Image (cartoon, rainbow over all chains, first blue to last red; front, side, top):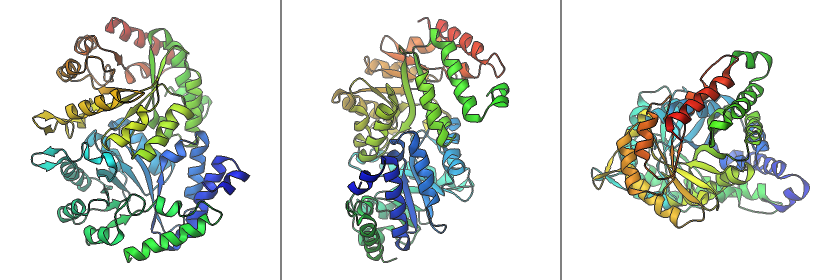
Length: 240
Length: 240
């Protein structure tokens, strides 16, 4: 967080200003904005209000992604889905599918939305479980197969979160799921070059995400301009 | 929600009253209270304040469980952990381990707390992934093994969420992990008899949870007294 924002206001106000300034500055280069719930929740009761303000600052022509990674039994999942799609009016959400179909279905019940399921993430621990062999294939393949089927049977759309760090995994998933929307984090701070990712993602629908590479482009008074430049460089590297 | 509560106040106020009255009424029978975040988040910005009020109403001698099922890459997981253990001061939290070690470690960094990992849940979809065979054993065994090791290497404690619906699975997990704290939902509304669960849980540490069986014991003006009676019946059935 740039010190000059913190010097003149409370932390929630500084976060509000930081986010809305970056949104306004990067709008020309961005098709979607992903809101990481963890950072807002850590602000306590004011965090939710800040998130509402940030959502209200979104241009009308962008997609919004609730990066909440929710997953619970059906009854509870329904309330999480309501929170993201009704209370907060997001276009899409990230979902953890480990608890199975009834934990996923409530997110797929909303027509015109997309639930991006954690399939193959790019973090250091992603191999602990996602790469375990099930019938000769990695577990994440099975997860992808299942959630793809569930998505086809639902009003809402099922997408995959697929990390950018392993281009071969991405390529293999795209070959099997040519029409599935992929949300691809990991361009920028988490590694993964833009051209490799674009080549591996093929011609199917993709949202490619750079978070830290954009929002932490500068920690100074020029943070918004630096974010705009970083976002535009990323867009150009992706050649979109 | 009892209609008389809704008739005289806003929904957040009704939830606040509902929860605090039930906590006060059931205190003699309960050793812990599990707060399901989904229901509070669906209330929007007021939900967090209601949760703070409900936490403030807790007797000082009970354990509090943040039933949030969080799980994200390390950086974000750290903020979720801060939210539960610092901003809100819970004693424990439920965590989804599917993203691997770096998504789990931040929750285990707090001494004197316990992170209950989703290992073997009791919902209808739990077999979709948790029962997949990995090296001849169900996936949830592998998850249990890993998170048990991570817990031993951390300041905080790692527990398991283990559903009450399959007593044999519970028994097998207890045989392998005699000292691990088990959080066992599914007594009451989700099925699973109290005596079966107690027998299967063996002599290791357990928290046995009844949610809907207690809080929905009556939808009338007697909701708190009915909840108290249901909680006491459950305690007696568990013979603790």
